[in-house]
Length: 207
Image (cartoon, rainbow, N blue to C red):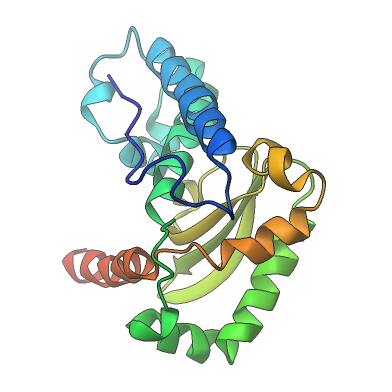
């Protein structure tokens, strides 16, 4: 069975950019519901719980049809949130300290151009969903997914994401999604993003 991971920092660690109340609600309520519903969907499929949720999402066509949508939605919610918590930090990390900064500059001309494009994609996501920086066929790509869909399901490896569901920001930012996105750059754990990027090279070498 799957379990709700603990946050890798205190609930108030991202103040004033993400408030403590939102973090409690987002993690303890919203993420927990996805985990609970995922486990319910898999009650009669114990053999699948031995696999990581990332493995299940990467191979959705192999999931029994009667629970495939539940894995996509509930499993995607679990995987997406688990990933999101990891790429946030309160240590004011600088992208320039890591190789990923050079890769971003190579793919998007500059870090500022990358941020502008990412913001445009995040703002353009209609309704609930996510904005992503992924590795797709060896190259960086900015994309978005609706609801709790995962880039893993279409062969992309995520290295950065932003939750643009309203529950992720509405208590503090109300309907000002743009302000929430601007704040996001102040709380990114670039060391972790860099680790995820470097890991894609290891996966490519071993495949």
